[in-house]
Length: 177
Length: 277
Image 1 (spheres, rainbow over the protein chains, first blue to last red):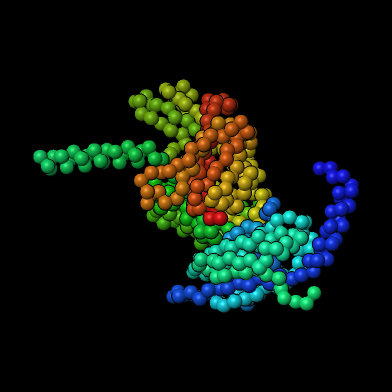
Image 2 (image 1 turned 60 degrees about the vertical axis):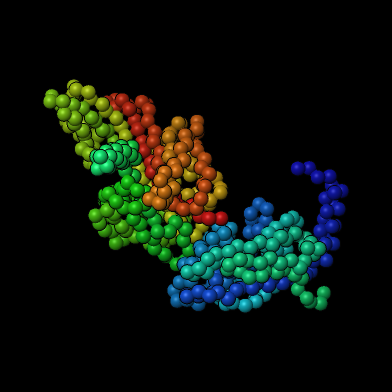
């Protein structure tokens, strides 16, 4: 593809300007529902950003990190889409991504768009995908649209799960700029 | 009157059932407990049987002597806890290395069928047996009546993967009918398409007949088979209708073979697991 030079220049300038405007963090709020089941285990949960070409950038992974002999890793493949979309190719330990599982309630993940891996993403449409899989339970995958450079006009945005996930919302993190 | 009708009906029913049984060949399969794995050196347990109803052991246990496991580097992996029951054999493997493992049993060579002086049908090697090609000259009478000699191979496989899928185990041996996946067999999802290539003695198995049957035959009235034919390049594309386990069987036959055989044939079977999206 040939792009005239002046357009290239314009787009570089544009990126520079918007990048500046994007020195923002996002707050992803994940609600894990209380379930009335005989045997309850907190879900394994993964959050990642996926490009239209299905390239993934990892945000978070919650699993049984503290089990003996790394036994908790045995069930990571049950976060099925995540496993396929990058989980299976990650080197353990997942540096900076990993947390212990979390029980029912509201949990917040801050997403810094200026973090190296996110800053490197080319402008375009992405999906923020949140997948939960529970031992002896079900699995659910929710996606929120995300445009980079950040299109704030659609924020805040929320979606509700039906089984393993409650309301999921994405908004600008309230922080002094 | 009523009784007679009932007998007739029953007889007809038995006849139909018998015919259906004959039409439906026994299927030999190796079924893994999981195909996609994570964690620290996990185990997979396998069932291996020859059954009428897919993935339900109801006929013969598979002989494990010829079942081999290959690790991601192509090296042999030990079969653990092997046992042969009445209807199925079982064994485990431990996945100590990341990547894709192959479980396979294969065999074949020259085969001959003829009639002896009394018109009795003879077979070499005997049913379910194997013999080296070098025995042919002594085991099969040269001018036997209705002598038919073929070179045929059969192969039964399945695959499991720890971590990210790898491709080393797909290197063909170039003997008999083999599958080289273009879509990784441990990366199959309902609603997606997968492409596979069939080779006969290392060359594209053009026109090979493929039949794919979803698991759970016991709980429905039809086989729900998907029938496909390999193209010029030996390739075919499968669109997986639902998640679940599948049995894929391919057959190939032609006359491109050296004497004394006049026919070469190959059969290939594989167990797949298709995951939901």
